Length: 169
Image (tube, rainbow, N blue to C red; front, top):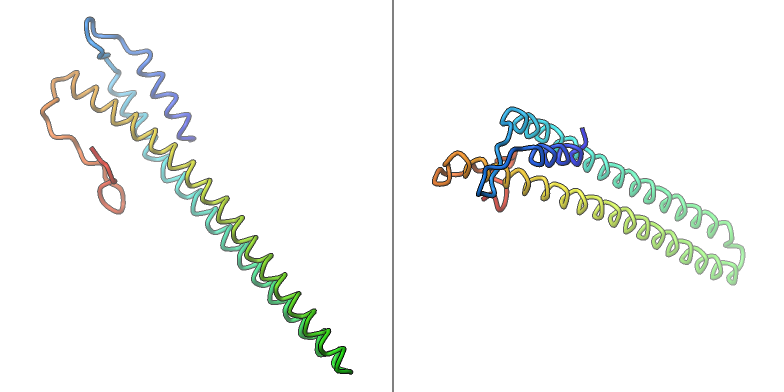
């Protein structure tokens, strides 16, 4: 399920909750909120898999660009070897081969740069979305802790497969 849809549902849950008079607190359906949090935990790894898929796609594109550059270089060499009949033709062939190699290198670098920019933009957008979700979950936890008098209780430290998340307040 899309993480943004789950965030919308979490927001809807808070909007539907009954306010506690004379406070900024609301009474939240705990089962619904915990169910949404569980669904978010499932959806986030899917988003990470999508990012890994983009990285694999970039690597495949780079490999294709490198292969094409090598083919172009090979063709340039073969062409230059075929033109070695006269000195002027040899010089011309070397010049052309160098131009082709340089062009192939520039094209490969441009393709790599474009792929990297696309992945960076996608990962940056994903990071922003995930930070927003995490902020909303933390706000919900704080609201519930405050509502039930758990203000002095130590907060749980969010964990991922690599250990605590950075900034896990």
